[in-house]
Length: 238
Image (cartoon, one colour):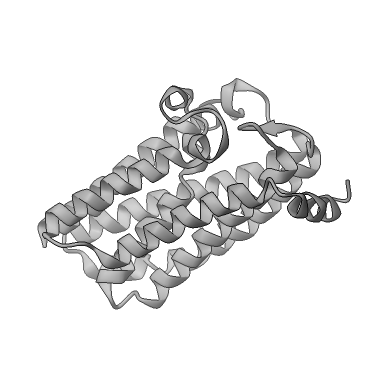
């Protein structure tokens, strides 16, 4: 279905644009958000993580375009690149999250102590890995494979949207609404558009979307508990 192909290609373009918008300081000047320099001890990890994340969203866009133009053979071959990118992004994501919190455990991010925010970052990595795994397992079932890969890309997009200050007045600059409000809203819009295009609810997409929303909100709340505070302190040895 052509509309189906346009849907995923357009989603890919949106993801790439948001990624560039959020990380433009890094792409253009090699700096952190706001133009601040990246801490020397984080430069290598941040660079590898940024490259892997960029490669993933670009891969999603290219794969969607290939399917949209009917180049299924190249799409299938290029799909193996996910097996190279996903592990790097997952492992590097864990290391980057842990190291960044070790460097500033008592910093504050979206009104949350950074050591508490570690749980949220781990949840993001776990969701991404789960969606990728589901997508790869169902690669011969397009009705499930495609929304899983879309959700994998959407699940890591918060790293970009939290670096876009113009979104703060809309979604807040605190708590889970500020952290994940933009990707929740984007996911809901995409689900509605998808349902209108097909004339029915895309169940794999809807279920995956609800799992993502529930996981992020739950993680944001659990991160504020005393139990996680003690656990994170033990992990970080602070």
